[in-house]
Length: 165
Image (cartoon, rainbow, N blue to C red):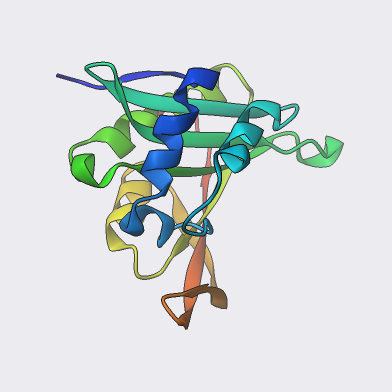
């Protein structure tokens, strides 16, 4: 059954928290393990320009993507994104479905020209996904974050809206 992509609702908080409580998910984001539910409730008070999408399969939330439109007047054409997919559903097109939906919204409804993200250099699957959607590496950040007791590098990637998703 294909994933349904929709805007997250407050009732989804526990499911979103459960996704980011999984080791392969929090390890590839800037999230820490053992986060309280209150941290995830902030998704619903994130402020102007934040869009919170979830992927749902058979009534179960199995992926989340946050898209933040920059609020600086000189960067309102820019948005940043981050996402996570439940370990059980990784490699099954859920990330693609979330990303496709976010880019369609950004390109066709939010007038976003530039989409930015940061991804660890070791996250080859995510890098390949982003490249399939037109993201290009713009820089590598040395010792960007601390992961499993070591500093890790990250890539800054961006996609410029050329008129097609």
